[in-house]
Every structure is written in C-alpha cells, then in structure tokens.
Length: 203
Image: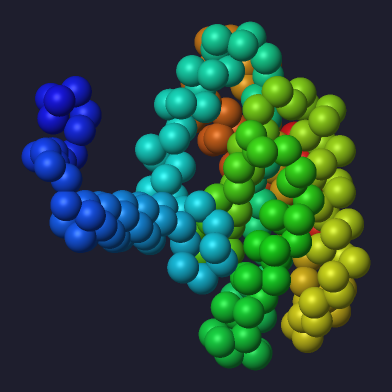
C-alpha cells in the first residue's frame, strides 16, 4: 500500500483519537509543503510567478504547443525610465510601482492557461498559449493602454506617468525555433521598442 502512494497505515481496530491525530498531522504537512512550493515559485513583491518557475515550466509550455500544433506567443515588457523613477521617488515607491504594474498586467489576462512572470527587475514576461501574433499584438496594445489608464505618476518621464515598452514574438511561427529562442526574439523586439522611443509595442 505504501509503495502505491500511501503515506500512512492505521491498524484495526481504529481508534478515533489516533485517526484524528494522524489526519491532522498529514493535513499540516500538506499545507506546509504547498506553502513552501508557493514561496519557491512566487515573486514575493508582485505575487507573480518568478524566473525560477519559468525555468521549471518552459519545457511544458513548449511541449504543449508542439502537441497541439497551435501557436504560442511571448510578450516581454519593461517599465520605461524606471531607474529615474527610483532615483526621484525612492525604492519603496519603486516597489509600489512594480506591484501596481503587475496588477494591471495580470488584470488583462483572462484565460487560465495564460501565465505572467516577473522576469527580473522591472521586466515582465507573458506566455500566451493558443495565441497567434495578431492576438498577441492586440493584447499587448490593451496592456499598454491599461497602464496608461492607470495614470501612475512618474515625475521624470516625458509622459508624466508610468508607461511600458513591449516586445512580442510567436512560436512556432518558425517551427525550427525553440521557445527559448522565441523569448530572445521578444526581448530583441522589446529593445527595438525602447530604441524607437518607448511606450510602444514592437514585434
């Protein structure tokens, strides 16, 4: 029985007090294990998935896309002029800004399969299964507008508010391309958006 996945064994006759104690102990262990996993995979500041979870799940996303034969799009986004924001308002306010932007991005995703990660610093990444390049661009523009509508003040930005630049790419637009390469392509598109003046979508 234990070799088949069981975690405990109660001899007969079953004593209620002992059974209750064992059940509570196993439920506590399960709760603690789930909490540790959550702490491992969730970015503490934003509540989004972290880079570690992305590394764990990337192959699964790629295999699902290969099996389904459906496109998977990647959005890579970066908060514009974030260092001047931190320098002028302080890192505590910078943390609040990151949380606000993370909330706006998450609020734009309505499908359970979509996933958003804090990629690092002020960078975020979205994986969008069953989404072609046109759908990805529409969502990216929706996110860009949602950030604008949030009107988060940015005193050192030419816009006077927080904005984001977004790069996008699609897998398997080229079936020989890996999902990791698609992420790099989205990052390159993000660089183009930055070079092109920021507050825009490229890809």
